[in-house]
Length: 488
Ligand code: ARG
Ligand code: ZN
Image (cartoon, rainbow, N blue to C red; front, side, top):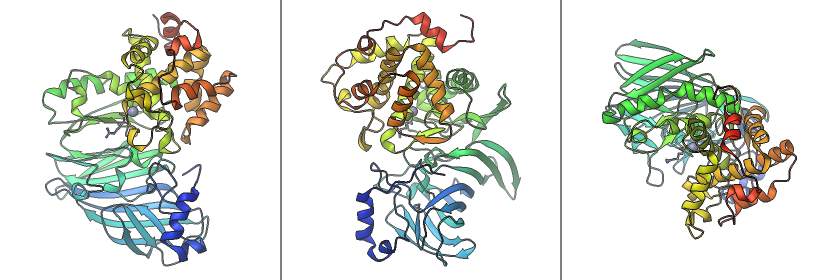
């Protein structure tokens, strides 16, 4: 499902040069969705509504075999279209009929259906494939992390090309059924609800369902030997957490953090409004990387996140993304502040609630930590460029911008914005500019200068967030706004 469809003229021009005859007739789907940061990401000409993945994974060899059935609607007449995918394909069918296909580069699969597809047509695409995701290198790199007992797909801005064919851009969100067969004694963890699992002939199949729109980079798969805890929230949502049996000294701290997911989500529901999805949880595989990722309904956490003891703050960050990033998704990757600025600010609000420093105190600290000549201030959180997309400045300058906004509009309006935006924009895409216009509408104040100062200038704002608005905030009124229903 995508709300917008943009093919910038630069990309259109490339297309004309590369494939003049077909492009001239306008019936070849573009090889990119039109994101200037990642021109090859996503594709043009169709809109996916559902992915059904039926997979089998063998940890001993890293062999992944799969059949993907993709349901889509054409947005133009098509004689050919692309999927983003890297593994070896053995057969493609479009509406049941065998289709011609060819690999183009590392991560494009070009499909020529037997029949020309008319605009607005429902299409089913079946892709059969097999390969070893750890051996698929794109620019010398693989997003698939092999572990001692399995493997993990969890990366941003892309991981799907290593394990299933897709329209790999957040603009085209879809629902998912992910069914994975693994050797008995091993588990397969994915997004949403574990609908069923069954075992036969030495293999156990896990059937996962994610029934709300989900961006490709937020889909995840982890195979390995896990300890699994399950529960239900007060609202009846299923909670499932999975911990590798191989976490060593970090095992206790990981559980002490992730078992608080329900509590964190309950608090964030007070701040942001209704939880947008059908399940909750988190998982910690035995990877060596250090990051975490807000994979939909079930964030991925590296064991190293828990190396110093419990880290509830990272849980707050990844669960906050379920609203900010996963339900309201970036329109293009330049809009990463829509995700990371708010997720970081949520950690500051948690700190404020826990009495470990108010958001204002943390904002003042961050501002003071970075002298004016620090490269930190060169990164523009509102348009950082692909190389700086996950720079610490996107997170911390991003949160500073929200503190500046809070001081400008006051707590009442600020918290109304924090709750109103994910409610009004649930399950859609948005730009930074969309948020600016929303904040101006709700607050009744012109905010373009404030946004420009804090999000778009490659230099340190002249005065810290509080002083810029000339409003002295006190911690008590902030606390009241963050947790209105709780006793002091
Ligand atoms: N969105 C992730 C987070 O919130 C960042 C992932 C960055 N990717 C990486 N490989 N470090 O923390
Ligand atoms: Zn984040």
